[in-house]
Image (cartoon, rainbow, N blue to C red; front, side, top):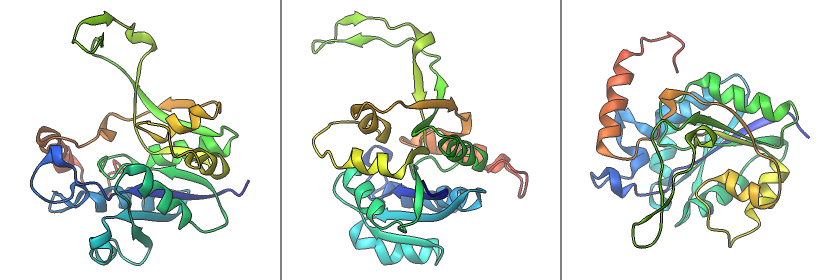
Length: 229
């Protein structure tokens, strides 16, 4: 396996829950597009040597101008899986480890990016950052009745970037029919073990307006060069 690390960012979604009429990845955070924050984190990591972004097809040129020449921008698809496939195909041939990162996690620290990549390079085929679940979670049926209450101590909230050996991720995306919500789910379906590492509180996903308010508040606390990002 090549030790060169590439990162994919599927950013073609509309992000309707966030509102505002602008694609979620391009919503401003601290006066700059949220996508730019996420990509800068990847570029500032020690191990990532290539970044590919899947953008809305009509905005490929615009996104390319925002991100600059160090980032390859390709047209994304109607669904997230389509965007990841498009970005995966655009990676350099000698990339051996692939990270997939949500544009909507703009405050993810670079040290988490490197931790995921390092764990894959250490021999784990699939790696995801996770946090313990603090809320009580209920499983309910179609009528809204509680079926059971899973114990919190075995539950984890999953973040990105998620890291994979390139050949494993490629095989996972060759299966077009599995309804999953993250890349690790596709890999799990292959029977490949997925390793977890500790995530980061600031790597939360900006999905709703309240998340954007929190992200703005946290970003305002980051001093330039303080190593938080």
